Image 1 (cartoon, one colour):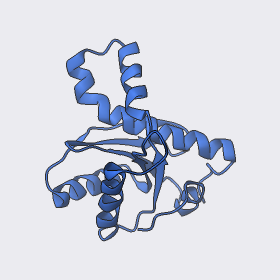
Image 2: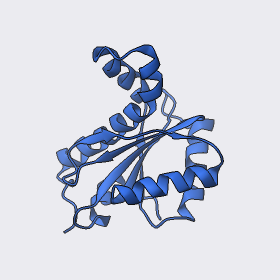
Image 3: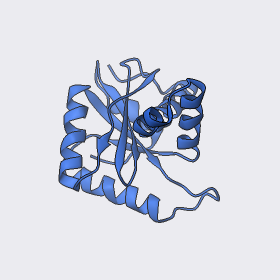
Image 4: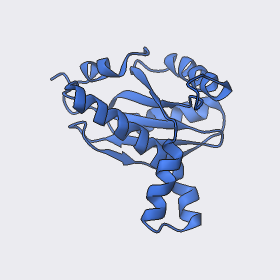
Length: 161
């Protein structure tokens, strides 16, 4: 696996492959997956954090199930644009995951993704309990959808066939 620029990510995909979106939290990992046309992100079941090895196994199994060819992970940048401890933790997670998979990864500035996901769930009148269960995957979908929209706007959304 290698870290690549978002614009390069579709070139690594083959026919039928999707992109995964990740929102890395301290207790859970939000997961979303794109459609094959790279236009729509759909939330998936969250991964409850345990140890890195178990987290990685759960993610890799999900990636295989959804025919994932690349990953977009939210990078928790501070509001002033600097990277703090959470961003360093995300980069460390990816460095560890690199040892286990060849999937390319692109970072996406996730500022305000959880806030936007919370707003969307509130607008859908989702109960507080259900929001707590779904917020991380909704944030992952928000992250991935932002990346997909950027790829489409730049003309880079067509996967290599």
